[in-house]
Length: 376
Image (cartoon, rainbow, N blue to C red; front, top):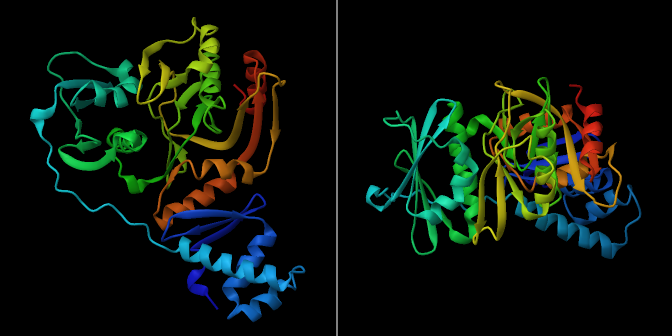
């Protein structure tokens, strides 16, 4: 038996078996047959016993059985490997290297961010430009600073080094900044969070809906359309959920819109406000940033997750789909806490959720579809 290779957590949710491996903080999704095959591998003392066991489930040739045995062994060893962590750094923050300082007002919490140059500023500032505060003598609650060496960013919070990231991996800097900012805004620690999800979230005043999808499939565009029609924008692309409450907190970044959605924005000009436009070499393209509108002050429940797909040739439609289709997109694209208790909270939350797919192209049609999901 290979019980040491068992997953730390295993749960069947909405018809899909979800296995979590503590050492690697990895999730895998399995149908019932594959889950039974994997269980047979774990509980068998050797190949002969495995072969006998799986042939009670179905008919497998000796060749296929050997291949399964080898692949399961490699998979589980990999899933139980602990990823190498970056070593702690004694890198010091050099205040002489910053030439740009911006103050941001987050509902009367003042965040000071120092940038070495316009290059570093372009990575963070566009998302929060609408919150810039130029008032004199501001009392600062938290400070961040970002400088660069030849090929790397160095990020500090309150003079403590929080990470070094390659210029080509600027999105990792953005993710770390988002987490540190979230903790500053909520008075929390990273370990308090169940996860931060690559999803846009909208709500009425009672419940939220999480919008997921592959990049370029229109989730931020849809969030903007819905916001312009009276819904609250809780978060765009970075949706944080507190572990113990399993509720979503507002994250106040502007909505980032790519060139392909500009024609939709043109139809909403009387309902939305632009905070920033940029043509960024590092981000490869023209971007516009829309000021979020949110009237929900407290954390909010979310029990609906929608896979979004913009299709200019299809009629808008909304239907329930399997959890597996959504989770195969949501989990790999998100940060989910490695804390075992929080992993269990994550699975608890998934058990409460319903899963849908929305295909849309017409703004009016999609707003009507959402009235069936969220009663305003």
